[in-house]
Amino acid sequence: MKNIFNIIPEFGGAFESGYDCGDGCFLRLYGNTNNNSFSEYVNILIADGYSVLQKNELNGNLFASFIKDIQVNVLFTPCDGKTRITACEKNLMPNFERTECKGECKTTFYAFESDQTLIDCGMCLMVQCPDYSFFVVDSGHYFQFNDNDRIHKFMRERTPEGQKIVINGWFITHAHTDHISKLLDFLRYNTDDVIIEGFYQNILPLDYDYQRDNHEEDEFADRFVKVLEKYPAPVYKLHSGMRFYIRNLAFDVLCNHEDIFPVHITDYNDSSTILMMEAEGSRVFIPGDAAVESDKVLKARYGKWLKCDVAQIAHHGHTGLSAECYSMLSADVAVFPVTRIMFDQNLPRHEANRRAVEIADSYYITGDGTVGIELPYKRGNVFTLPDETFEDFEKIKRIWRYVYSEERKNELYEIFLAHGGNPDEMVLPSSKYGWIEPKPPIDD
Image (cartoon, rainbow, N blue to C red; front, side, top):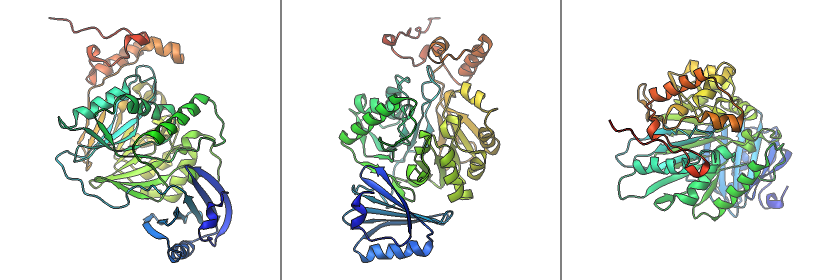
């Protein structure tokens, strides 16, 4: 463990192990601790000259953040009697003070329709605030060729003419290619009329020792980190227990790879940073691709406190959180960032998906079109935009070896049309990728 801990007061608990969290941040885990241990250490830090940046409590979990020469965060979790202390060389912190946001725009949560032409994964979420600015979550896969342009177009159409697009924050749940690729393209090609005020993340350190099935993922993650380091906007590292504010949005950080430790992560999806967002009195759960170990943390620490209005279903509804966790969330609206094909295949296989659907007043599949939810959530104020993309079955067969019957293809095409899909306006990659452009409308 790096000697950064030599310059902060010693904690009195039973030291168990240490962990390099990345970005110049180091963690020490202590066992056999309690509320008094937490309070005593807070007082010790204050007496040593540390200034309190934030104190927060979530369902009995206690958090405090301090600054002196370095940043120190302290998190006590009563479910296991553990205290996690993170000492960070970088002092950049998110905004811990509630802010006002005035404007004429209705606060709206969007689950964006990723291009499903070639691939079933990819996720992008957005929240538009009263001042027309956007909070964005993830982006999409590199096989979703035009999605950086589509994301830009979506925000441009919802920003007053003559004004720059303002992204008040871009949150990255984890560094898998289907979540970061189109952000990289967006930063390269789409920022001429865009202001990005900051990035929010706590991705797994690049040198973390886990079983790698695809080194391409590592290459993208490495590139992603380097791009953010050079981009002229602050990058905030999130730690569980924090509550931070952007415009009229409040975010509680619930879990990330630091909370999985000392369990060794074998599924990269378990490195997802999980947020609970509050806006206009409603709560939106954003787990990214959280998996089995994250599920254990959520259930043990938060239980029924997790109750929310809207839940993004983890890992596109493939494998992720448990049925028990979705019961605790008890979301009125469940949003699946996936294609209808994969939703239909996964529903009978995964009890968790069925539970989320059974509990919800309504559920939506982003592959059927972008989902919009005006906040505060009330039953009936969910809308969907026309379906923009449709599968190219021949190329899917060549790339993924998925084969569908003609009957199933026709059924899916009819569903596409029923959701407002227009075959003459489908977004397809340009001909340089070997595609035939959509046919022009036929004159009557």
